[in-house]
Picture (cartoon, rainbow, N blue to C red):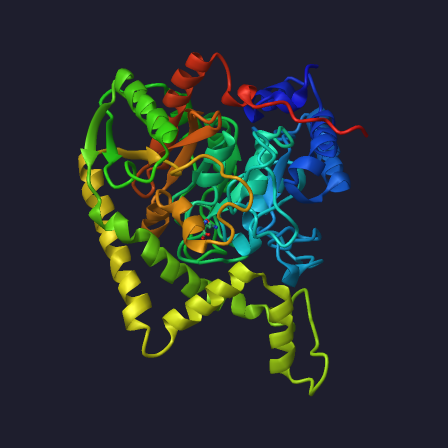
Length: 502
Ligand code: GLN
């Protein structure tokens, strides 16, 4: 069998269904690939060799016994380390959770296990999912498989890099302001942020509860649709979970028809500040959509200009409250002050001082300030008003267009260190992705080509809440047209990674 790690999840599922390969073989192939390249890429914080192979053997046995299995049964997956996994270390890439072993599974993990999908390991991220480069991980950055001197995006750089480096056919990401879509854009992969409430948040280590959503990371639009149907749907354990089941995504990804679809280009998400090669790639994809029968219009969402500012008040405010539970008493790290009395407050201060990184501390300080009496109305209250205006802009835009499109990120992958000391420059990576989180609408990023620097560019599709099917419909068609032009998947253009001798 030719290299199993090069297959898409849909292809692997078919090979497994027809018993041409076993899940143990597929899983082992990916574990071997990890052993060969992950020293360089560092997509994984923890590898679950034994558990993954045991899960694979179990699904193989069930298939042999003639049990009815889920579509993706036997296809292995990587999970971002901000999603809790029972019995397996989960750290959110923070020192404060070093060695913490959760006593339960996130709902989405329960669903992966029920579908018979072996979990290869846990992927790297910016600490507590705060960042756009994975440089804020307490365990060292992930490197972009396209150029090991560049960032893989963030916060979910590990999940995107694992999929781009063929270490996993699929991965789970989380997206609070773009952490699924922006890493997908800069690594040449596909990432989907579902409608808020579409995938259960139960068992996600919360960053900002009103913005967080988990979703698929993959190499094709169809693969994301397949995974979305596994993890999505109502969960009584999440009070913000939407009713109903997650269906229709796979059909939409395969539908291949855009006739009569109205595509809106968001005026505010493009132009100045966007790299030339990013703009050119975006415009080419728009032309392809037009050639496929879509009607293209321009829409204006003036409040989007304030989205970044509103996000960086709302997110820190919610994060400062969510992170208050890391107090040295309940989970993970506990540091006692070197001298003086051993009071709860002093243990808490010593633990949080040692356990949190700079970016996390920056946001906690910002968030507590924005929420403090006297400043609440000026900061948090104003940001919430802007949020309402952004939702209204979306509503108006979606009355003129069925989907909205933009570049996913203003630039291609930048070099390590380039933006690390300049939080504002780092935050600007998310200008195009943040509005969707503030409004709860779904978004997808797929590769639209290479920029003039030879690095991948992401194309973002946004749809109204609960209309995730439209993302897959548009993404499926565009992907087919683009890959026909390229003569194969974009990742075939990435340089081969040096394979370590084992
Ligand atoms: N980069 C954004 C931030 O730093 C988004 C993070 C995310 O989506 N988790 O907040």
